Amino acid sequence: MTVRIFLLIVSFFILISNTHSNDCVKMAIFPFKVNAQKKSEVLRGIIHDMLKSRISQTGKKQIIASEKINELISDSIVETSDKAKYFGKLLDADYVIFGSISKFGSSFSLDATMLNLKSLQEPLIFAAQVHKEDEVIPLIDSLAIKINKNLTKVFNSSAENNINKNKLTILSNTENSISITHENKALSESTKKIEFIPDLDKEFSKVQNLDHYIKGIHYADIDLDGKQEVMLIDNSKVYVYKYLNNQLNLLGKFISSSMKLLTIDAADLDNNNRSEIYITAFSELSNRLVSLVLEWNKNGFQVLKKNENWYFRIIETSDLNQTLIGQKQGVNELFSKGIYELAWENNVLTQKKMLDTPSDINFSSFNKGKIISEEPTYVSITDSNKLNVYDKSGNTLWSGEEYYCESLNSITLKISNRNDRISKFRYINQRLLLKDLDNNNKFEIIVVKQNASPGGRILERFRNYKSGIICALEWNGIALEPKWSTNKISGYISDYAIFDFNGDGKNELVIAVILSQGFLKKNKSTVIYYPLDNQL
Image (cartoon, rainbow, N blue to C red; front, side, top):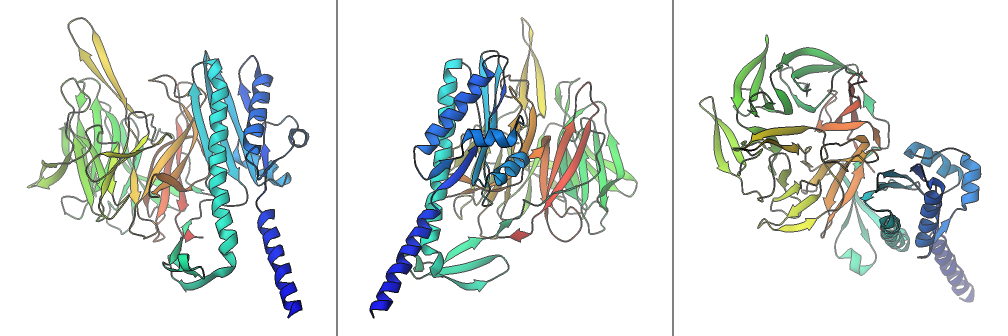
């Protein structure tokens, strides 16, 4: 009996020691890249010292000595996730932090990333700007606070898992989930569910580079062969491609030099078994919308409608039906009040009911689905590219702080008055996709998060993005939180969709990426895709 008690006590202390040994994590803070002519070393030192001080003071963290890091990386600048992961593993770090600070005039921009090297946790990405030098210190402090909050959340989750991990019992193993229960009475009252997430750490696949600037991407089985074709637009052309052996093979194109193409969507809404292609287009010459509807037949494109005063967008509703919505251009306004559901009646595109959308959104900045409950509610992107979630009454339930759905796709409306000629300018936000990828009867919000180049958000009509990610957000009861994301994608992400891209019978996350653009460079873009096979 005494021996048994002794063994139990020893086992208890071993368990406790193992639990506490996992509490302390090793963190590597790599020297930040400083884009400033003066005080670069001072800024770099301030960032490191402040982060080290703020992060380590909450305990449970061991900051790897800067001397050890500098000895390893020498004169290298760690500015990519791949480099950070490489050096972080050599340092046996659990977390790595890297980033840059840039000065433009009197303004400063701070960009930082924290990676968890021991799990598939989504990278923590921080991007913010201030307009005065004396606001830099509070900005760095904000970064440290955000890092500590993220780590506290991970520690709390990890602690719960450590306590409970030896008492988990697998009840069932289905295609989409593993159900588990627990000996603890409080937890065993309800079955807990571990959800599969896409394995997006693996390499994406890529088609050949294209010599045009992809502004939009969509899909439809336009030749009725049972496989989806890929449709792309640039400023003045619509392209239709068929995928074969990792190549996009051109089937045809529609050219219009008299209009600027803005968005593309496709669906069979007139029920003739052929998808219509809905193009939002603007004439800079006549200063108005000249949108069109196309359809593909054996001889190429057929124009069903033209010169339509509609901004088009197709959204997928909670019952998985596709709905065409439209908003008109107003008199001296880019957007008139009211967003409408559109439908075909006797070969005429007609305006049906007006949607009960919140008043501050436009055709490209919203979606509706089962986000917070069984009852569909709206989610939108503001003019400043922040997310809003609304309750069933249309009141703002939550507002985010991160930038999402940013775009370089813009429209300018020229307005004449008695004294001079002015213009109204607006970026067309990128899509808010709603998808129930894990079949839990609750939508994830699929959005793009662009990484702006230094100074890339300061001027209203100048944006520049050097990379980005596609991520899924899910409602956690009080806010939207990241669920999964792709790795960082170099280039500007111009559009994205989810469909069976390669004809394997499974959906892929398909992304249009601009690789180069500008007056001195040729336009070069491509399409990449990730499998959405569900894996732990």
